[in-house]
Length: 92
Image (cartoon, rainbow, N blue to C red):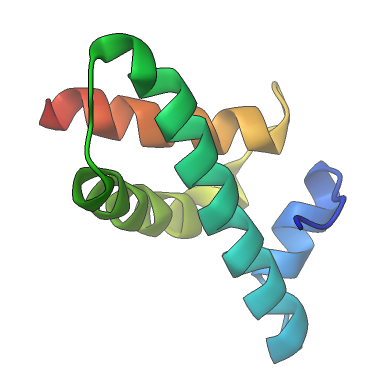
């Protein structure tokens, strides 16, 4: 189950020095991205699990590199899933 986090919690937890908190945020972000991608891409036809895993990995790197640049113009979850979807579309 994904922990309830607001935008600041996501940013702080992903950058936390507390390993358990950071790992929990990373695990939750991965799960969120997989579900968001599967939902968004289901309209594009069948995508297999290995493709989703590859896209999540690539998007995850982008998100972790840029999470400090998150401006809050949308929810963090929306921002992160959008990065993953755009990554997937560019690969398709």
